[in-house]
Image 1 (cartoon, rainbow, N blue to C red):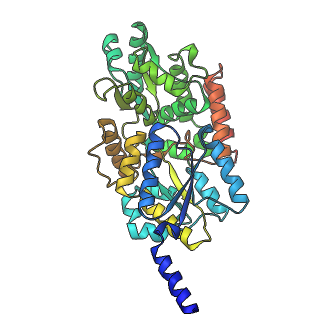
Image 2 (image 1 turned 180 degrees about the vertical axis):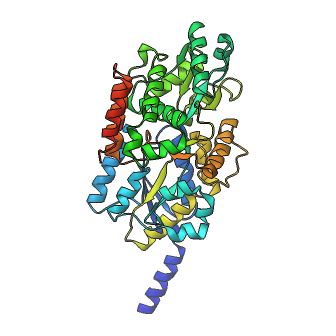
Image 3 (image 1 turned 90 degrees about the vertical axis):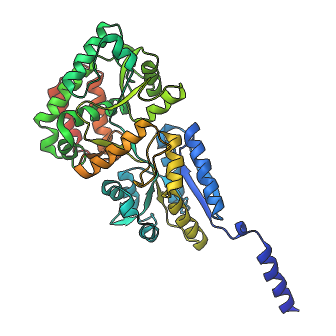
Length: 414
């Protein structure tokens, strides 16, 4: 009788859907806007096709601050999600806590070291082993241009700082606001880092904002950066304070402003308005930064799981995120480019293709640098202190000399 019951139970088990035995993937993220939400839906579909159960843990708002609060609560209680959207040095900080899972087996089997630029793969590793999978690469050092405004002003699209100021003067004389900007700390930092990269070049940028070298932060190049930024400030309108970045982009779209310094997420605003790259708007490297690329990467860091089924599902997630298929779908929706270098670019627009070509070239030349304005380059406390100095400079009559001295002090904050 017992044998018959056991046989019946085994038979019933074979008839149950695979999902009953599937692992669950719970992913904490803040991809909640239109294009991002579409991408998450695609990832869920791909994971379901692998036989895994998807549990969405979306936390909107705060540029990820709310999500990080929720993550800390879960990790402290001993119940971390399968993966969480984490950026830059924060991956190392979580790695030091001993809570991240080693996904080297997946990375080696799939050949991630060959598929990613070395600068990007290093960010995804803790003590030489992969603990996170990159989803995309955003380029931050873009200058968005309205060609009709430039034509009306008789101005030339700038590639150097002298050309930039010449174009800005012509736009101003034509009654067009030269620069569209939002006076929020992260936007001020985004503008500052493009000026710093354009004035000092990638070697200076790395020493100052990645290595936090005191002599470099306090040196003559930093002073020149603030002097250049001081002049840039004169072309920003008084209504910039507190303006959201997308409203600044709208000023360029409708011709009220000629230029905006902003990452490639701005492209989504142009395309949503029915504008075509190369015709209705131009994407060019910020002055002096043509051979360089400041990157901002979204990634999923993997947290240790006790259940073998959850571990298997986590490996499936890492493999799926780095697949060519997902990298293409996610980035077409988000406006960024694939982190995986061998992803086909046929379906991407001209700005994305240019971004990919520049990423590859900068990776080889040493011009690929992390964006500190977007939490990719330095500890959060240091970044906050440096952001404060930049914001104070942008919103006061502080001299470049004083700003340089304060920036050097901020670089000591850890």
